[in-house]
Each structure stands twice: as C-alpha cells, then as structure tokens.
Amino acid sequence: MSRLAGKKAVVIGSGTGIGRAVVRLFAEEGADVMAADFDKAAELASLKAAVEETGRTCLTAEVDVRQPATIAAAIAAAHEAFGRIDVLVNNAGISPPKSEFHEQDPEVWTRTLDINLLGVAHAMQRVMPIMLSQGSGSIINTASQLAHKPAPRGGIYSASKAAVVALSVSVAQEVAASGVRVNVVCPGPIDTPMWRAGNPEWAAWKIGTLPIKRIGTPEEAAYAYVYLASDESTFMIGQSVSPNGGDVMW
Ligand code: NAD
Image (cartoon, rainbow, N blue to C red; front, side, top):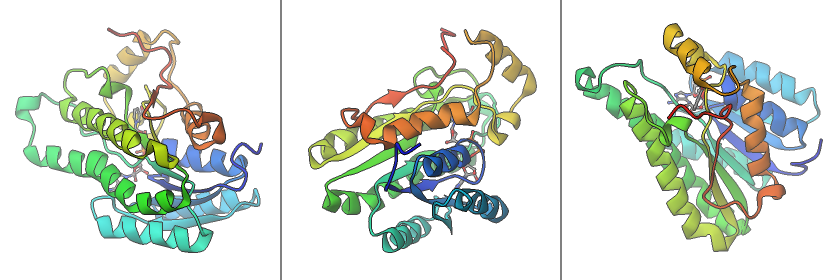
C-alpha cells in the first residue's frame, strides 16, 4: 500500500463521491492530501478524521471553483504546508437536470461551464508554475464517458466534459517535456450523490445498457486516479482513462 509514498496531493471536489474515494485511496497509498470542496465543511471534517487515522496528513480547504482566488489560496496553502505539490485532481463538477437543449435557461450553460471547464482551467494554471519548477507533477482532470459519447438531453454537460478532454490534451502536450503530466479520467455511471440525484428511470435504463450490468463504485473509479497519480503512469500523457463498465451503448 505505498504506490504514492511521499507524494503530496490536492483534490478539488472531494467532499463526496468520487473525489472523497480518491482522497481515501491516495492516503491509503501513502500520500498526504489537501481535500478541497465548496460548502462541504462537515464532509471534509469527517474525511480529514478518517484519513488521519491512517497516519497521513489531510488538510482541508473551502474552494468554490467559480472563484479563482479560492483556488489560488488553497494551492498556495498546500504548497506552503507540503513544500511541493505532486498531484492535482480537478474533480469538482455539476450535472444539470436533463432537459431539451432548446428549453434550457442559458444561465445553466454558464454555471456548468464555469464549474466543469473553467474551474479546471484556473486550477491547472495556478498549480503549473509549482510543478514546472519541480520538474514533475501529475494533473488529473475528471471528465466523463459523455465527453466521448454525448447523449440526448445533456448537451451542455457533455460539451463541458469534451472541452475538459481537449484542454487537457493540449496542455499535456505543452508541458510533457518538462516532466509534468496531464491526463483525464472519464467515468461511466458511478454510484455517488450526483448519480442518485438524476432521473431514476434513465439511470436504470443506462445501467441496463452496460455490458457489466451494474453501476460502478466510487472506489472503482478512484483506482484510475491512483494509477495516474503514481509513477506507474509516467508514459501516460494526455490520455483518457475510462472506468465505465465496458460502455458500448453506441
Ligand atoms: P458528487 O456530487 O458527489 O461530487 C462532486 C463534487 O464537486 C461535490 O463534492 C461538490 O460539492 C463539488 N463541487 C460542485 N460545485 C463546486 C464548486 N463550485 N467548487 C468546488 N467544488 C464543487 O458527484 P461525483 O459523481 O462524485 O462527481 C465527481 C466528478 O465526476 C464530477 O466532475 C462529475 O461530473 C464526474 N462524473 C461523475 C459520474 C457519475 O456517474 N457519478 C460520471 C462521469 C463523470
């Protein structure tokens, strides 16, 4: 259990769901972690307590990725405390209720892109000088299976996640020779608060289309982040890794 021994990580969007599992597994694998989220003080406090039982350090930070100053403050605090940042996970995301595109309030588009895309961009920009000066670092951005296979009634979400993939690949190419890696995790259906908040009929239909015929657990997604954070993946640059139950819907 030491695939991340000595590493220092920041996980944004880690109060619940996949991000929370990422923090737990990172700590189990030997990393010290800053867990950051928006409006999730109680969840972060319980996560910190659970991680610190394993003997690892868990800092917490209040970050609203729509406010770049809060991202900057958290990254500066983690750098100050840890002396370096080896891994940044950009996992904060929202999934607006499914609806016909032409009936959607454009305010939903703005909010979705602000959080799902621009939040990732701001955090990458903030951590990059630190990682470039170290000559190493792994940035892992959460997109979605829907980035590659958009479905009806979720266009702006799919677009935001496709943009995360495109941005990640472009930045990965820019910094690869400097020792900094950027990759993407594109989960399929994972049993989290976000998934449970969705339409139950659609969820049941979706799971029925999966070859594996069941939903994934947050841990099954989180192990992809462990791999991309570790030195096992040093030749992975600008890749999408998809824990998705074999999704072959179309
Ligand atoms: P979740 O709702 O449990 O986690 C999302 C986290 O992002 C929450 O802790 C939330 O507080 C945080 N967040 C939301 N807005 C924020 C903001 N403005 N600033 C900071 N943090 C904010 O859901 P999840 O399923 O664990 O989602 C994690 C990521 O995985 C998301 O990016 C989501 O789009 C993606 N994803 C999830 C699934 C799935 O089936 N669950 C599939 C594909 C992709």
